[in-house]
Amino acid sequence: MISLPAVNNLIDTSRSKGNSTVAVLYGQYASLKPNSLSSNLLTLTNQQFYDVAGRSQIPYQTNNLFAASVSER
Image (cartoon, rainbow, N blue to C red; front, top):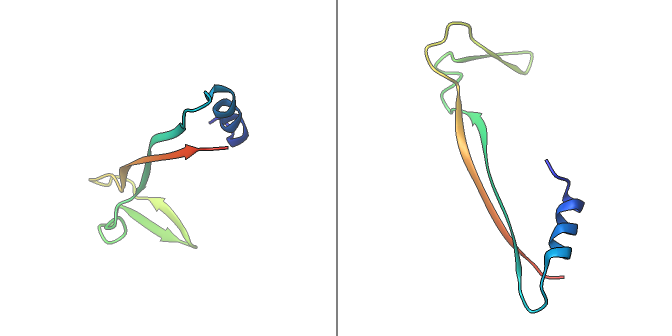
């Protein structure tokens, strides 16, 4: 992933006078399903989650992330 200073530098060098620049982030990430423990899809041991072998479902769900911000310097 590109660093935040590098992103800011790209925005600064690409900006045209009189125009606003909008930085946009779109991505996907995984999180645990709310029923992962109660459905025995994961176990909790010593404050760590572990996959259960031979489970019938996946304990994770995919989420979308979208963020946009106007950059004015």
